[in-house]
Length: 214
Image 1 (spheres, helix red, strand yellow):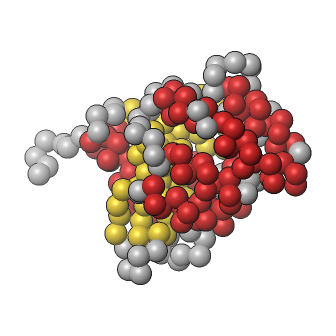
Image 2 (tube, one colour):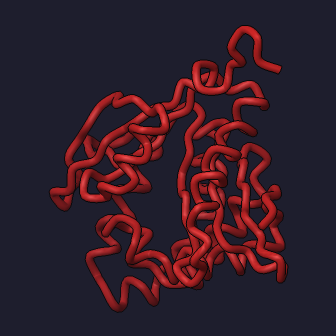
């Protein structure tokens, strides 16, 4: 297994991994959309200059997992809004299967513009977004290595603190994050009743070398 920076050409593989592993993620918006929507989403994200996406690649050259994030959430959402019609069109098949997605997509979109009272994600500052391991790949020990490598690269790029969201029901990720040094910043209730935490890593504290270390 090797780790590397993801490229725009990886959007198809990353979308497929996310799609096949969505039942292990939260029960939210991204777990209900089509593979085609995810492809369009990652095609945009991987071309965003503020995006930092790291992937794990096995000996056959197949991507086994990825961790994504941005150095500036506000700029990321501004960039995504430029492609709102492209994303909306790609969402139509998912809405046809689940009309409620239209409601959630609209309010998520409004929240990224700081409009409305509903909160879904952090919309400012550095932020990690998804950390996904291919459900078909059993080398899960590398998932933790992937996560920490992603955080370390973001730290080396000058970020001191980075936030992320995790649903309370995703207990394994909550516990891993706690053990890995993340701290709770706030909590809120989503429109569908799910409890969500905003957590944060102090990257200086996590990666700063202690006296005597090489």
